[in-house]
Length: 125
Image (cartoon, rainbow, N blue to C red; front, top):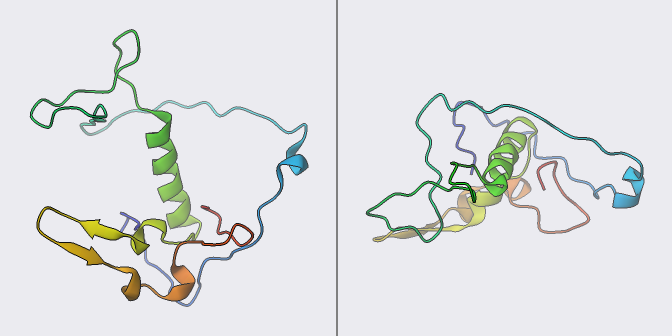
């Protein structure tokens, strides 16, 4: 589910889906993306398996705080889903808390649900 509730959803325009471009089409095409990330608000990426009572930052071998690539990938995917009109990948799940469990799948129109065929994917998938 997109955390960006300030971006309206056009329910009359479901995600466009198509077969993905095969890898061999990208032969000879390569590149690199460089950037700088500035945390403008406090940021905490918890260490996996960390103790809830003592929060620990993720660090590299040298003890420097890091943001794992998987966290950046998730953030970029959320942005692509939001501004690129992708499917609502996380909306179809079962959401569990200590006291309740709810399924939101039945509240989402079929055309907006998570891609489920490898030959018919939205821009995010």
